[in-house]
Image 1 (tube, rainbow, N blue to C red):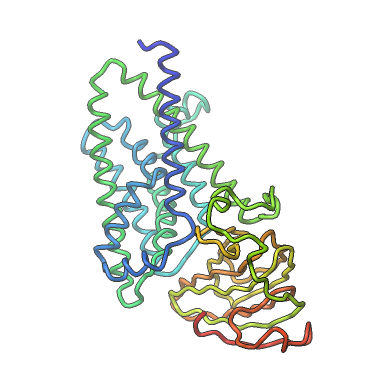
Image 2: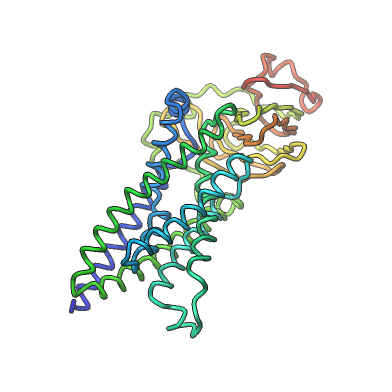
Length: 392
């Protein structure tokens, strides 16, 4: 038998590895994609979507942990094929349906539920329902299908971040899903080899307890991380701890405030109409000085859009940005007092099959970046303009 110290060390390494994987994956999926990445996807066609699906599954630690939990105590090929097929069918249904119909759920909440699903499968593996709850566990087959459906919404969220083609939408979705399955099969093969090799050792029972308790810890941490992310984006003002830029921004080639030629800021009020094509996205930005205030409200005619309200410091070349609020909704309003000078505004993504018009109302100390007219020619607070933007 392994000593208690050895067990503790192995459990520590397992949890540490899971945490490192989670950080790497979070960085990999930060704030959308560059235009170069989008162009590469479009030029690469469906093979590119397939590759992205495979790499997403192989870097999707939450999905991999769940699959690992499913196959942990399965010893026959028939059982493994049965449960993995159930999970595959479950997530394929919601992946295809949600993406094809442009259905989006809050990705933080979906990922939080996926974290709980990892806890559930590990709890079932240690027979926790009978040991700790004194009850029979629910049907494992039904639970895996249900959890697979939830995982599919998470996969669809990632897929809808890509530049999907309206003409080849179904092929894009199928290609991405085929890539997901190829990645899943690759990961599954490695997992089965490791578990099968360890199953023959006398320490397998000890290893299984460490692994499944480790899955419960990892799933709980994932849940807390995602709920923190949800609260952060829903109530960003509660998480502002400093008005100074981050270390990454400080190390970049950002011009000092004295070097930046600040445009004159005046009080103004504008009504702006922004058109976003079907399956398209668009940004709209204003320039605000440090300490300037902005009040805003925007709404569509009913279609919900994913949006990210954020800002970039003037003169920054590192790609740093600060996200103030992001969600999926058909309207939003609020106010902002800036902590740095620079561009501030919105990114919207329209996943519906029809164009959407946004009615944006702004009031505060800012400069419009899309108008040729000079600020000096506009009467403060007296000018309420109406502009329509085909491209921004």
